[in-house]
Image (cartoon, rainbow, N blue to C red):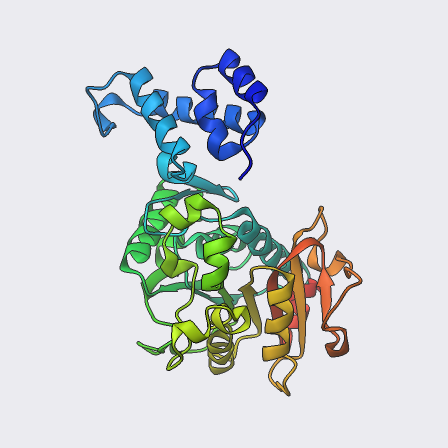
Length: 359
């Protein structure tokens, strides 16, 4: 990482002596100023009795938080939350921090479903969120769909007890804050499940399967992720284990093997549950193309269609997207919609196509 220009550090120090600390992780002055404002608001809004160190004066507490941030600790772990749509998602160490890209495709999916209900109302909808983490996807889908669909059933599954505990806290917290529909407490549940081993088995039929699984290869984790991610966020939620029976040393340099572990098991679960739509987050366009070829391009007779949704929609909805003109899976009839980077592989069958098109 290049050194910060001395002129920038001096300018930051002239504005506020704490800003140079935040320049280290932020790398630019406007971002550092925003973070300092949020940290200052956090200190001033936290009652002294609730502070981890109530005897420490507020200015010193602010300085200590800036030091933590300078060492790379994620801002969301310091503040304790992250906006996700209109929700306030609690964030704690040991559970992956929600990303804006995840919010984008979750919102696009919900908006397409809502548009469909305006022409052909849906009375019942069952959604399965695998690798749920904080529960952000399950909760946001419920928040956006509950006003339009009376009988929702949303299940969030995760292998991490820490994540499941936090997801339940997020359900309770956002319900108390009025961010979730009154039905959320009995229409949303979070429970243990291991996607890779299938224990306990996921039973029943589900209309939509959605997942933000671990998808970063070990080599990419070591070289491409930010230091704060490597040092503070759970590797369990980012890097899949090597395929069963394959030594890690044989897959560490093979992103197609090491990073794609979850996609075929997720696809099999979608088949088993008779899902009409499947949405799976990916690291980028290259991985998206691999996943499309694996689950849609090898004689797969389950799905009727497949698309890659990008993370920059510029106000476009899925049915208004444009191909990026560089479709490496062109021969499969797969469209790439939006701009930026490939972020979600979306498959559908039967009614799912109409649900996504909002017709």
